[in-house]
Image 1 (cartoon, rainbow, N blue to C red):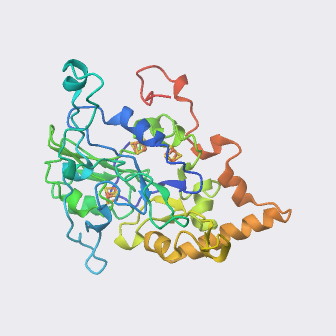
Image 2: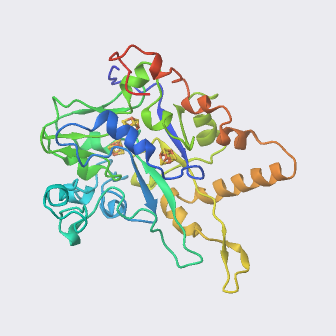
Image 3: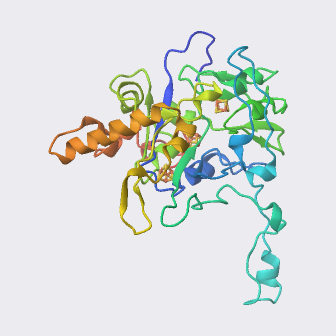
Length: 353
Ligand code: SF4
Ligand code: SF4
Ligand code: SF4
Protein backbone atom coordinates (compact mmCIF):
# COMPACT_ATOMS: atom_id res chain seq x y z
CA UNK A 1 0.00 0.00 0.00
CA UNK A 2 1.84 3.08 -1.22
CA UNK A 3 2.12 6.28 0.76
CA UNK A 4 0.96 9.44 -0.93
CA UNK A 5 1.82 13.10 -0.63
CA UNK A 6 -1.10 14.11 -2.86
CA UNK A 7 -4.61 14.77 -1.63
CA UNK A 8 -6.05 11.40 -0.73
CA UNK A 9 -8.41 9.86 -3.21
CA UNK A 10 -10.55 7.89 -0.82
CA UNK A 11 -11.02 7.26 2.84
CA UNK A 12 -11.76 3.98 4.53
CA UNK A 13 -14.23 4.33 7.36
CA UNK A 14 -15.84 2.11 9.97
CA UNK A 15 -19.41 2.51 11.28
CA UNK A 16 -20.34 0.86 14.56
CA UNK A 17 -24.05 0.54 15.29
CA UNK A 18 -24.18 0.93 19.07
CA UNK A 19 -27.71 -0.45 19.07
CA UNK A 20 -26.36 -3.79 17.87
CA UNK A 21 -23.06 -4.02 19.72
CA UNK A 22 -23.46 -6.58 22.49
CA UNK A 23 -20.09 -5.94 24.10
CA UNK A 24 -18.89 -9.47 23.43
CA UNK A 25 -15.30 -8.33 22.75
CA UNK A 26 -14.98 -10.70 19.78
CA UNK A 27 -13.55 -7.80 17.78
CA UNK A 28 -11.01 -7.10 20.52
CA UNK A 29 -9.90 -10.72 20.64
CA UNK A 30 -9.90 -11.12 16.85
CA UNK A 31 -7.53 -8.15 16.63
CA UNK A 32 -5.42 -9.33 19.56
CA UNK A 33 -4.79 -12.82 18.22
CA UNK A 34 -3.91 -11.47 14.79
CA UNK A 35 -1.64 -8.59 15.57
CA UNK A 36 -0.47 -8.19 19.16
CA UNK A 37 0.90 -11.46 20.47
CA UNK A 38 4.58 -10.54 20.28
CA UNK A 39 6.96 -9.41 23.00
CA UNK A 40 6.07 -6.03 24.46
CA UNK A 41 2.46 -6.22 23.28
CA UNK A 42 0.81 -7.81 26.28
CA UNK A 43 -1.04 -4.62 27.18
CA UNK A 44 -1.92 -3.79 23.56
CA UNK A 45 -5.60 -3.85 22.67
CA UNK A 46 -5.72 -2.00 19.37
CA UNK A 47 -9.43 -2.72 19.42
CA UNK A 48 -11.09 -2.27 22.80
CA UNK A 49 -14.75 -2.11 23.73
CA UNK A 50 -15.45 0.24 26.61
CA UNK A 51 -18.56 0.37 28.76
CA UNK A 52 -19.93 3.90 28.71
CA UNK A 53 -20.19 5.88 30.87
CA UNK A 54 -16.91 4.59 32.22
CA UNK A 55 -13.20 5.27 32.53
CA UNK A 56 -12.31 2.85 29.74
CA UNK A 57 -8.80 2.15 28.59
CA UNK A 58 -6.36 3.69 29.16
CA UNK A 59 -7.95 4.61 32.45
CA UNK A 60 -9.77 7.97 32.14
CA UNK A 61 -8.55 8.46 28.56
CA UNK A 62 -11.15 11.15 27.92
CA UNK A 63 -9.38 13.43 30.42
CA UNK A 64 -5.88 12.98 29.00
CA UNK A 65 -5.85 15.84 26.51
CA UNK A 66 -4.24 15.90 23.10
CA UNK A 67 -5.96 16.81 19.84
CA UNK A 68 -5.48 19.75 17.49
CA UNK A 69 -5.35 23.44 18.33
CA UNK A 70 -7.82 24.62 15.70
CA UNK A 71 -6.24 28.10 15.63
CA UNK A 72 -2.66 27.03 14.95
CA UNK A 73 -3.19 23.51 13.62
CA UNK A 74 -0.58 22.32 16.10
CA UNK A 75 -0.92 19.45 18.58
CA UNK A 76 -2.39 20.32 21.96
CA UNK A 77 -0.59 19.11 25.09
CA UNK A 78 -1.63 15.71 26.32
CA UNK A 79 -0.76 13.06 28.83
CA UNK A 80 1.31 10.09 27.73
CA UNK A 81 -0.60 7.07 29.04
CA UNK A 82 1.44 4.63 31.09
CA UNK A 83 1.48 0.87 30.73
CA UNK A 84 -0.38 0.65 34.05
CA UNK A 85 -3.11 3.00 32.83
CA UNK A 86 -3.65 0.68 29.87
CA UNK A 87 -3.68 -2.26 32.27
CA UNK A 88 -0.21 -3.67 32.01
CA UNK A 89 -1.09 -7.32 31.75
CA UNK A 90 -1.15 -9.15 35.06
CA UNK A 91 1.09 -11.79 36.52
CA UNK A 92 -0.98 -14.48 38.22
CA UNK A 93 -0.18 -16.73 41.20
CA UNK A 94 -0.04 -19.93 39.13
CA UNK A 95 2.71 -21.50 41.26
CA UNK A 96 0.75 -21.01 44.45
CA UNK A 97 -2.49 -22.41 43.03
CA UNK A 98 -1.13 -25.29 40.97
CA UNK A 99 2.08 -26.31 42.73
CA UNK A 100 1.93 -24.76 46.19
CA UNK A 101 -0.12 -27.43 47.90
CA UNK A 102 -2.87 -24.89 48.45
CA UNK A 103 -5.46 -26.60 46.29
CA UNK A 104 -8.92 -25.54 47.33
CA UNK A 105 -7.61 -22.69 49.46
CA UNK A 106 -5.95 -20.27 47.02
CA UNK A 107 -7.59 -18.97 43.88
CA UNK A 108 -6.07 -17.37 40.83
CA UNK A 109 -5.77 -13.63 41.19
CA UNK A 110 -3.68 -10.85 39.67
CA UNK A 111 -0.54 -10.10 41.60
CA UNK A 112 -0.55 -6.34 41.01
CA UNK A 113 -1.24 -4.22 44.09
CA UNK A 114 -4.99 -4.08 44.56
CA UNK A 115 -5.13 -0.27 44.50
CA UNK A 116 -3.31 -0.09 41.15
CA UNK A 117 -5.22 -2.73 39.28
CA UNK A 118 -6.69 -1.74 35.98
CA UNK A 119 -7.26 -3.56 32.74
CA UNK A 120 -8.86 -3.17 29.37
CA UNK A 121 -12.28 -4.19 30.66
CA UNK A 122 -11.94 -3.35 34.32
CA UNK A 123 -15.13 -1.28 34.63
CA UNK A 124 -17.19 -3.38 32.24
CA UNK A 125 -20.95 -3.16 32.74
CA UNK A 126 -20.75 -0.75 35.66
CA UNK A 127 -22.30 2.16 33.80
CA UNK A 128 -24.06 4.95 35.65
CA UNK A 129 -27.32 5.89 37.34
CA UNK A 130 -29.36 4.31 40.11
CA UNK A 131 -31.70 1.36 39.85
CA UNK A 132 -34.18 1.20 38.19
CA UNK A 133 -32.73 3.86 35.93
CA UNK A 134 -29.15 2.69 35.67
CA UNK A 135 -27.79 2.52 32.15
CA UNK A 136 -24.77 1.76 30.01
CA UNK A 137 -23.83 0.92 26.46
CA UNK A 138 -20.77 -0.37 24.66
CA UNK A 139 -18.34 1.71 22.64
CA UNK A 140 -15.87 -0.17 20.41
CA UNK A 141 -12.74 1.92 19.98
CA UNK A 142 -9.81 1.66 17.59
CA UNK A 143 -7.50 4.12 15.87
CA UNK A 144 -9.77 6.45 13.89
CA UNK A 145 -7.44 6.72 10.89
CA UNK A 146 -8.06 10.43 11.12
CA UNK A 147 -8.18 12.82 8.18
CA UNK A 148 -6.08 15.27 10.19
CA UNK A 149 -3.97 12.80 12.18
CA UNK A 150 -2.35 14.73 14.98
CA UNK A 151 -0.21 11.70 15.82
CA UNK A 152 1.43 12.24 12.43
CA UNK A 153 1.82 16.01 12.95
CA UNK A 154 3.40 15.45 16.36
CA UNK A 155 5.93 12.87 15.17
CA UNK A 156 9.37 14.48 14.77
CA UNK A 157 10.76 11.67 12.63
CA UNK A 158 8.00 11.38 10.02
CA UNK A 159 7.29 7.77 10.95
CA UNK A 160 3.55 8.03 10.26
CA UNK A 161 1.84 8.52 6.92
CA UNK A 162 -1.59 8.45 5.30
CA UNK A 163 -2.07 5.77 2.67
CA UNK A 164 -4.06 6.05 -0.56
CA UNK A 165 -6.90 4.34 1.30
CA UNK A 166 -6.78 6.86 4.13
CA UNK A 167 -5.21 4.56 6.71
CA UNK A 168 -2.67 6.00 9.14
CA UNK A 169 0.31 3.66 9.18
CA UNK A 170 3.66 3.73 10.91
CA UNK A 171 7.10 2.81 9.61
CA UNK A 172 8.60 1.08 12.62
CA UNK A 173 12.09 1.46 11.14
CA UNK A 174 11.71 5.24 11.25
CA UNK A 175 9.93 5.42 14.62
CA UNK A 176 12.38 6.45 17.34
CA UNK A 177 10.00 5.73 20.22
CA UNK A 178 9.63 9.42 21.13
CA UNK A 179 5.97 8.88 22.06
CA UNK A 180 4.81 12.38 21.04
CA UNK A 181 2.11 10.56 19.08
CA UNK A 182 0.82 9.04 22.31
CA UNK A 183 0.56 12.46 23.91
CA UNK A 184 -1.07 14.06 20.89
CA UNK A 185 -3.69 11.42 20.07
CA UNK A 186 -6.89 12.51 21.84
CA UNK A 187 -8.25 8.97 21.66
CA UNK A 188 -5.16 7.49 23.34
CA UNK A 189 -5.03 4.74 20.76
CA UNK A 190 -1.26 4.53 20.35
CA UNK A 191 0.47 1.82 22.38
CA UNK A 192 4.14 1.68 23.22
CA UNK A 193 6.14 -1.49 22.72
CA UNK A 194 8.62 -1.45 25.59
CA UNK A 195 10.64 -4.30 24.09
CA UNK A 196 11.09 -2.86 20.60
CA UNK A 197 10.90 0.80 21.67
CA UNK A 198 8.34 1.81 19.04
CA UNK A 199 4.78 3.07 19.05
CA UNK A 200 2.11 0.79 17.60
CA UNK A 201 -1.57 1.11 16.75
CA UNK A 202 -4.35 -0.39 14.62
CA UNK A 203 -3.04 -0.94 11.09
CA UNK A 204 -6.51 -1.16 9.57
CA UNK A 205 -5.71 -4.81 8.81
CA UNK A 206 -4.11 -3.49 5.61
CA UNK A 207 -2.71 -6.88 4.52
CA UNK A 208 -6.27 -8.19 4.55
CA UNK A 209 -7.59 -5.05 2.79
CA UNK A 210 -5.02 -5.54 0.03
CA UNK A 211 -6.27 -9.11 -0.42
CA UNK A 212 -9.92 -8.03 -0.50
CA UNK A 213 -10.61 -9.41 2.99
CA UNK A 214 -12.45 -7.31 5.56
CA UNK A 215 -10.61 -6.37 8.77
CA UNK A 216 -10.87 -8.98 11.50
CA UNK A 217 -12.87 -6.68 13.78
CA UNK A 218 -15.49 -6.30 11.06
CA UNK A 219 -15.65 -9.84 9.72
CA UNK A 220 -15.71 -11.53 13.13
CA UNK A 221 -18.38 -9.37 14.78
CA UNK A 222 -21.23 -11.72 15.78
CA UNK A 223 -23.53 -8.77 16.41
CA UNK A 224 -23.15 -7.72 12.78
CA UNK A 225 -22.68 -4.28 14.26
CA UNK A 226 -19.85 -2.89 12.16
CA UNK A 227 -19.59 -1.74 8.57
CA UNK A 228 -16.52 -0.86 6.56
CA UNK A 229 -16.29 0.93 3.25
CA UNK A 230 -15.10 4.00 1.44
CA UNK A 231 -16.78 7.23 2.45
CA UNK A 232 -16.77 8.44 -1.15
CA UNK A 233 -18.55 5.34 -2.52
CA UNK A 234 -22.16 6.48 -2.80
CA UNK A 235 -23.42 2.90 -2.86
CA UNK A 236 -21.64 1.99 0.36
CA UNK A 237 -23.68 1.67 3.56
CA UNK A 238 -20.88 3.65 5.20
CA UNK A 239 -21.46 6.58 2.84
CA UNK A 240 -25.22 6.42 3.32
CA UNK A 241 -25.10 6.17 7.11
CA UNK A 242 -22.52 8.96 7.51
CA UNK A 243 -23.06 11.39 4.65
CA UNK A 244 -26.56 10.81 3.34
CA UNK A 245 -28.67 9.93 6.38
CA UNK A 246 -26.28 11.50 8.91
CA UNK A 247 -27.11 8.97 11.60
CA UNK A 248 -23.51 7.82 12.13
CA UNK A 249 -21.36 10.36 13.96
CA UNK A 250 -17.70 10.70 14.94
CA UNK A 251 -16.58 10.46 18.56
CA UNK A 252 -15.24 13.65 20.17
CA UNK A 253 -15.03 15.47 16.85
CA UNK A 254 -14.18 18.60 18.84
CA UNK A 255 -10.63 17.22 19.20
CA UNK A 256 -10.11 18.35 15.61
CA UNK A 257 -8.49 15.24 14.11
CA UNK A 258 -11.27 14.33 11.67
CA UNK A 259 -11.89 10.78 12.88
CA UNK A 260 -13.06 8.15 10.37
CA UNK A 261 -14.70 5.76 12.80
CA UNK A 262 -18.39 6.61 13.17
CA UNK A 263 -21.12 5.52 15.55
CA UNK A 264 -24.87 5.10 15.25
CA UNK A 265 -25.82 6.43 18.71
CA UNK A 266 -27.68 4.22 21.18
CA UNK A 267 -31.42 4.50 21.54
CA UNK A 268 -32.59 4.37 25.11
CA UNK A 269 -35.56 3.06 27.09
CA UNK A 270 -37.50 5.68 29.02
CA UNK A 271 -36.93 6.38 32.71
CA UNK A 272 -39.14 4.76 35.29
CA UNK A 273 -40.89 6.85 37.94
CA UNK A 274 -40.86 5.84 41.62
CA UNK A 275 -44.18 4.03 41.17
CA UNK A 276 -42.64 2.17 38.20
CA UNK A 277 -44.78 4.01 35.69
CA UNK A 278 -42.92 5.06 32.55
CA UNK A 279 -41.79 8.64 32.07
CA UNK A 280 -42.28 8.82 28.32
CA UNK A 281 -40.60 12.23 28.16
CA UNK A 282 -37.18 11.25 29.53
CA UNK A 283 -34.79 8.75 27.96
CA UNK A 284 -32.70 6.77 30.42
CA UNK A 285 -29.42 7.66 28.74
CA UNK A 286 -29.16 11.43 29.29
CA UNK A 287 -29.14 13.18 25.89
CA UNK A 288 -26.54 15.63 27.21
CA UNK A 289 -24.21 12.72 27.89
CA UNK A 290 -24.57 11.50 24.31
CA UNK A 291 -24.00 15.06 23.11
CA UNK A 292 -20.75 15.16 25.09
CA UNK A 293 -19.55 12.17 23.06
CA UNK A 294 -21.04 12.69 19.62
CA UNK A 295 -21.77 16.42 19.47
CA UNK A 296 -25.08 18.27 19.01
CA UNK A 297 -25.95 16.32 15.84
CA UNK A 298 -26.73 13.33 18.03
CA UNK A 299 -30.22 14.65 18.76
CA UNK A 300 -31.16 14.79 15.09
CA UNK A 301 -29.59 11.38 14.48
CA UNK A 302 -31.70 9.80 17.23
CA UNK A 303 -34.81 11.63 16.02
CA UNK A 304 -34.21 10.29 12.50
CA UNK A 305 -33.83 6.73 13.79
CA UNK A 306 -37.02 6.97 15.85
CA UNK A 307 -38.94 8.44 12.96
CA UNK A 308 -37.87 5.58 10.67
CA UNK A 309 -38.88 3.04 13.30
CA UNK A 310 -42.28 4.68 13.71
CA UNK A 311 -42.76 4.64 9.98
CA UNK A 312 -42.03 0.90 9.79
CA UNK A 313 -44.37 0.21 12.72
CA UNK A 314 -47.09 1.92 10.70
CA UNK A 315 -46.48 -0.40 7.78
CA UNK A 316 -43.93 1.60 5.86
CA UNK A 317 -40.55 0.51 4.57
CA UNK A 318 -37.18 1.93 5.51
CA UNK A 319 -34.01 1.49 3.48
CA UNK A 320 -32.13 2.94 6.46
CA UNK A 321 -33.37 0.29 8.90
CA UNK A 322 -32.84 -2.50 6.37
CA UNK A 323 -29.27 -1.29 5.96
CA UNK A 324 -28.71 -1.26 9.72
CA UNK A 325 -30.24 -4.70 10.16
CA UNK A 326 -27.96 -6.02 7.40
CA UNK A 327 -30.11 -8.97 6.33
CA UNK A 328 -27.27 -9.91 3.98
CA UNK A 329 -24.28 -9.78 6.30
CA UNK A 330 -21.83 -9.49 3.41
CA UNK A 331 -23.13 -5.93 2.97
CA UNK A 332 -21.21 -5.06 6.13
CA UNK A 333 -17.94 -5.87 4.44
CA UNK A 334 -18.03 -3.24 1.70
CA UNK A 335 -15.76 -4.28 -1.19
CA UNK A 336 -13.80 -6.65 1.08
CA UNK A 337 -15.88 -9.77 0.65
CA UNK A 338 -13.12 -12.29 -0.07
CA UNK A 339 -13.36 -15.24 2.32
CA UNK A 340 -9.96 -15.50 4.04
CA UNK A 341 -10.37 -19.28 4.11
CA UNK A 342 -10.03 -19.30 0.30
CA UNK A 343 -6.59 -17.68 0.35
CA UNK A 344 -3.33 -19.56 0.25
CA UNK A 345 -2.26 -20.39 3.81
CA UNK A 346 0.52 -18.05 4.83
CA UNK A 347 -0.13 -15.82 1.83
CA UNK A 348 -0.89 -12.13 1.93
CA UNK A 349 -4.15 -11.48 3.72
CA UNK A 350 -4.45 -14.99 5.07
CA UNK A 351 -4.91 -13.68 8.56
CA UNK A 352 -7.44 -15.96 10.15
CA UNK A 353 -11.07 -16.62 9.27
FE1 SF4 B 1 -19.63 -5.21 19.63
FE2 SF4 B 1 -19.25 -6.67 17.43
FE3 SF4 B 1 -17.18 -6.00 18.95
FE4 SF4 B 1 -18.98 -7.83 19.84
S1 SF4 B 1 -17.59 -8.02 18.08
S2 SF4 B 1 -18.10 -6.12 21.00
S3 SF4 B 1 -20.86 -6.97 18.96
S4 SF4 B 1 -18.50 -4.58 17.78
FE1 SF4 C 1 -3.61 9.25 15.06
FE2 SF4 C 1 -5.06 8.91 17.25
FE3 SF4 C 1 -6.24 9.66 14.95
FE4 SF4 C 1 -5.27 7.19 15.21
S1 SF4 C 1 -6.96 8.08 16.39
S2 SF4 C 1 -4.99 8.57 13.43
S3 SF4 C 1 -3.50 7.50 16.51
S4 SF4 C 1 -4.76 10.86 16.13
FE1 SF4 D 1 -7.41 -4.56 14.81
FE2 SF4 D 1 -7.53 -4.81 12.15
FE3 SF4 D 1 -9.66 -3.90 13.47
FE4 SF4 D 1 -7.47 -2.38 13.33
S1 SF4 D 1 -8.78 -3.00 11.61
S2 SF4 D 1 -8.72 -2.76 15.16
S3 SF4 D 1 -5.83 -3.92 13.31
S4 SF4 D 1 -8.75 -5.97 13.65
